[in-house]
Length: 261
Image (cartoon, rainbow, N blue to C red):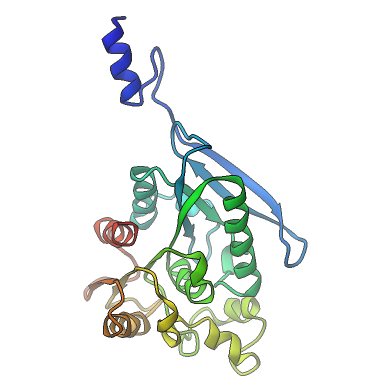
């Protein structure tokens, strides 16, 4: 093979005599500091990953009823967009269980994500950390961002809620996650409601919301976006009046690119 062709293949990420380099996906188990249980997250390293180079991290939070594999494997638009943005920017892509199928970013899930980010920063050269998610994950990434703004450089929320005080769905799961009902632990519902703490969102925020979404009604995130705009914060809202509980690929990618760039 001519030397110029070898060099061209190498420069384009090809492999001579074989397939192009592929991402490296690892299912990671760790002991949760908060309660000593074994928890898991998936980490995807970009092709040709160099440990001595700096990389951004995109943490993707799955929806209710799913687990860490949703944003790694699922073909739905929100998941594909997150994977594609991570790949385009050669990011370390991370998808935690964060207490799995009924998380809603309660105290233990919150502690797990803090621990994961801390461990990632110890293991890799991390430049910035971004959060995204859909549905329960869209709610959870907003919650985490107001609780730990020092750890988050941008957040992209798709079809989530920003107000657990008023949110009425999935109450059994949220009660178990938060440690009680709205009447029993009202402080947990307030502290995890991003709409009540817009001043803490000092990073770029992207939001998608749908007018016919009955699973997670859009009212709270629409009010949050309005409050952030009034504070002259960096916010992009994509609102689709006629859609239900989903986000188009182009809209998901738009808010992800907004917070990254």
